[in-house]
Length: 222
Image (cartoon, rainbow, N blue to C red; front, side, top):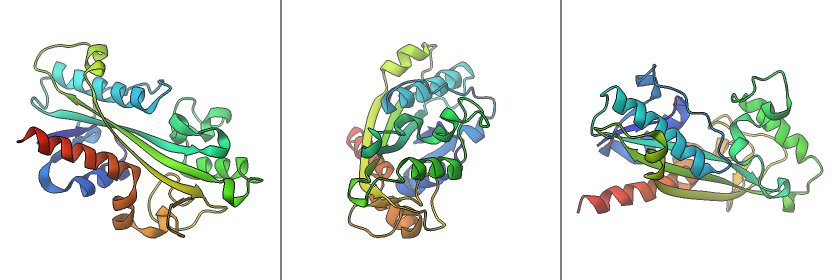
């Protein structure tokens, strides 16, 4: 199975490959440097994931590239209850939303996103720092005929996962990426950045969504 992952984020690619194992030949946007960037302007994880998958699938079809492949796009983020679900779909560019020193619409550095989150939660007590990581995967087949991006997006199949936890008062650990140093999953006392890749890949929102994807592929092979 040729799976083209619609991201240039090396951390995400590594995580997806580790969770799916060797049953898939995984490519990503780094293998297609001319592929267009999707504008992530939807207000839901599903909308952004479908748009990213459809944009890449449409381009691959127009280039006669990766015929017979499927495109997998991930949109995921952190939902903090004390912030009414923020940063949500804006997780990767949280610090850039109100800081002109960062490029508008572009991802801001992890450290800046974490600093903003801690600042907004500075007066929130531990019992009210509940949060979850949420992931939505969109799967779109690369068509042999020209189909509009909008039509491809309507054909997306979705797989979802969530991981409940809480936000720490300070970052800890050197592993992971994004908000991992601040997120302590339910039932644990260490952050994702401390627990390590093997533990994270069993607990994470992305692992749960990818397990749904694996089950889907298994059912279609019967």
